[in-house]
Length: 65
Image (tube, rainbow, N blue to C red; front, side, top):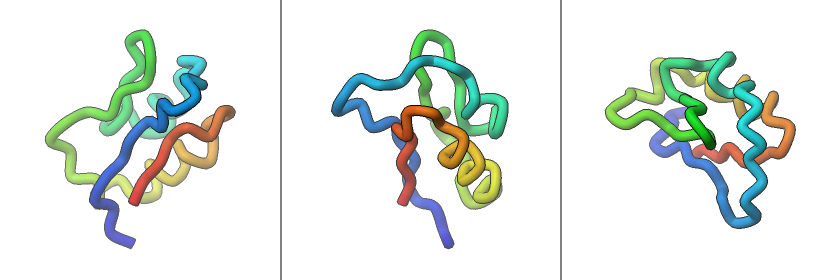
């Protein structure tokens, strides 16, 4: 699976800034106030970690395609 895009689904403003995504994959995710996806990252290098972040998100707001 080639990941082309990773984003925070803000449609319901549900990110609780727990930091689980940053723990799972600090190369891609950062949680200053609310989760952000770092720019310029080759997502394909971190596919399994991104999936771990998606799976561990308690509010299920991390999306990827």
